[in-house]
Image 1 (cartoon, rainbow, N blue to C red):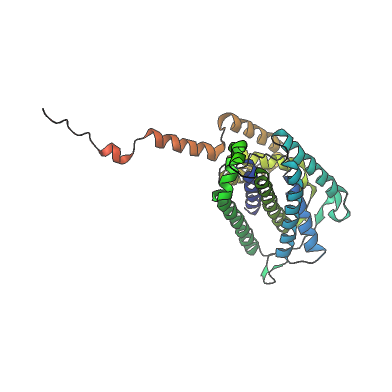
Image 2 (image 1 turned 180 degrees about the vertical axis):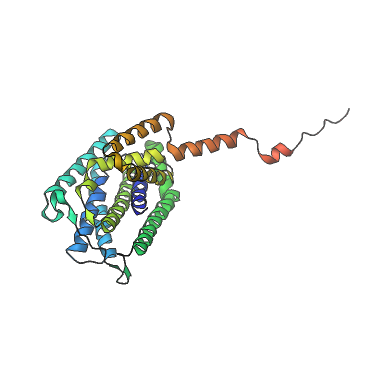
Length: 299
């Protein structure tokens, strides 16, 4: 459950730019991985408490998102995706070669410590409540952002950017802010993952992690609020319950993604929402159904 909630937050952060900003990034794993390494290093080497280590990892991801987003948003479509992928590969090789990351072995033995110096995170119940609070807080923030004037402007930019520019909005600034917020929330997920799993590894910074989060988001329903959460829980559940199949799990993921694209173009939650709208449009309102037409007056 903790792993599912962490990846659900990561998927929701990715959906903030992919679903509402139409900025599909192929390198979002760099924020998850870099935040995990910084958080693990801060907790293990610097001896910071869990909340400060997580803040350090989140701030690192936000700064990395600001720097990479400043260059990436100058392009759109496949060019934007390729620029983010290039940045992600650079971060991956830094994580592979840097002395403090542990190379291929990763940064192991990350201490969980005492939250605010009081709550022992080595106890499973306390750790679960901590992860739940982070997930709900991040999800609530994304929900408020989507419903705010900022979210509506972001949606307008994704629908028709020249029209939004004609209304006086600086679209580049809005896209950069959205990208930075998405990076920070992804870093929050990566920092929490390092504390929970007590390891920061190259897997979190690899390009395949970006593909995995794409699968989660599009499987659940890109552009929907709850779709990434559903997709993350489904993918994590498959990884856990089908782990005995080994590498065949990846093949099953690919088959499910192909079937989803063919049969559920809007994702699971997106198709459910569309089905509900069609039913409401097809059935007449209850008040109108109860009313009978008045008899024509006799001449």
